[in-house]
Image 1 (cartoon, rainbow, N blue to C red):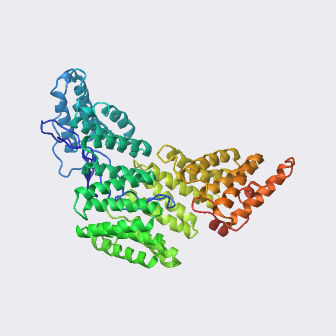
Image 2 (cartoon, one colour):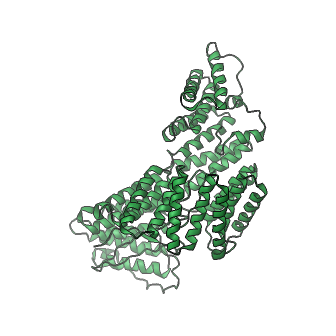
Image 3 (cartoon, helix red, strand yellow):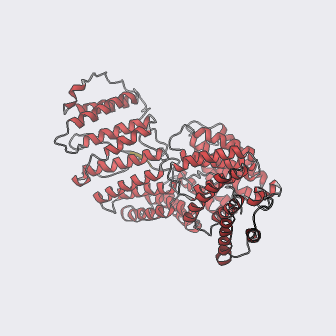
Length: 605
């Protein structure tokens, strides 16, 4: 009986192949291939995202093998009469041709033609309307070839049709086909940046797998972890934590102590705990994961975990311990990968960040320059995603140096590297948001607004349209609109940001309070004094009852409210205040002071 497995490939594996293994009855079955994450990285716009889930740089998707080493001779050209598609022997033959064409390196276009005709043949030969697993399999192959050609939109309707063919109630074969279809469909949505749809597909696939195998099967644990990784990318950490706990429980039962599976689970759990601010718990999971990797002789993985441990120590301001962890990892990476490997550069970036935070600016700048030297001349095999991620992180440090122009150049280079890469929409959106912040800081407000707008469009099309980060970007775009005197547009953006942030982080969060303040100022500029008064009264009530009045913003807001209440008692024919002063009463401060007042996303602190 075939099991429902999400087959994984090791990190640094060559491009994934469309595999059509044969089952015990001699029938071909598709194996959806997916990747196991391999190194923890921080893929952040202004440090807004957690490191990518579980150990890996990216989540690979199914695609035909484009370079399988030795090229086989291409199969002989076979002419197929379309009228013979109702021959029951033709479908399997066409699928074999498709497989041989891919294996020979002849190209996916011809393989696609064979696979499409195979699907037509299986459809014609279906007996009495019975669901044909051969049809579902051929549709999976068609979709995988479309993905390899970059035609993800065309793959989606094919997969949606494929998942309607099998009936899970008919047994394990049908369950396998349905599970594979949902997981492949989820991967394809993920490549288009549609994280919410991707997660829905993974959830449905997991449900089918659990019904077929039970909730404690080790293969269910693999799917749970994969779904947890998707939740982390969507910044839904509570759901990710629940799934990761379930994965750990299953592996405790079925795997020996200190297994590689448990180590991977703990690295993901540490990532989730770190994102939620529970640094001590994250440290505990990382130490246990490191011990498991040491027991299994995984030296490079131990070094990668040391980097993660250093990150947690840095968050806890335990700087000496962080330096020790980074230096341990650096020694291993230099000896095993070479001095110019991107992993070495990634440790340089972490050390640069640490030395900036400890006031050692010369050392920080030196490590930034060393990292950029490696990213500027990458060793063979370095991916564009690795270089872009590194440049984004270095740009954040140059921003701290108060060098926005240099930071902006690095962000532009990073975005250019990712422009033609599938599945990078959310990352590009984050970079565009960061660029918008840089442009805003140097007074290029029109360009800043355009950059924010592009980021918002991408985020609306993905699963992050309801995330706190999306609310932050909307608020920052609203501020750019204020500077351009597009007051109505700014008000709409602030209102949407308020709604999202109230739901995601609550009304007492500093980001939400910043939006309240900006919205009140904008309402006042529009002449909606009563609305502005209502917001400021609400903010002051929150501060007095829940947050305390020690925050310096409390006095500013109290004065603004007093002025508005005074004005509300008479007609508003007095000289209007400048919009700049409405948004920030201290707007005449020097640029250096302003940069301290604003957070990396543009909120007032």
